[in-house]
Image (cartoon, rainbow, N blue to C red; front, side, top):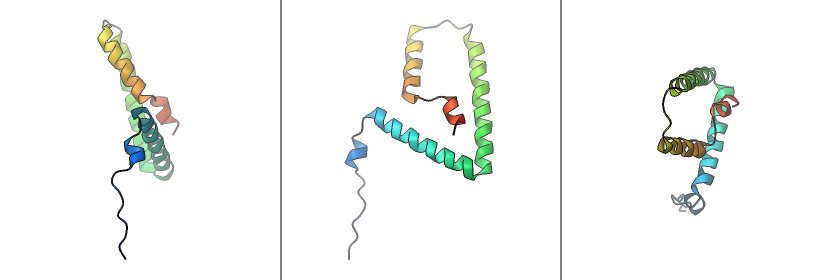
Length: 95
């Protein structure tokens, strides 16, 4: 008996709008990170180290950014980048 092969093209996933796809990917990412955090001391330690490093870098960037003039083009690109991510460091800590 021949087995039906799994399709590579999934019309539902392949035709989703970008925002919806990012939302699904982020939900799955959070699910996997929660699992890793609750089941693996190594991942828990690594995540804590990364979060501490990111927070340190954010503080350094804030301090550095105080003396840099704001350029409209840079502001727009930063805002569009943060809108695409739609999550912050606090979201990762809560996992």
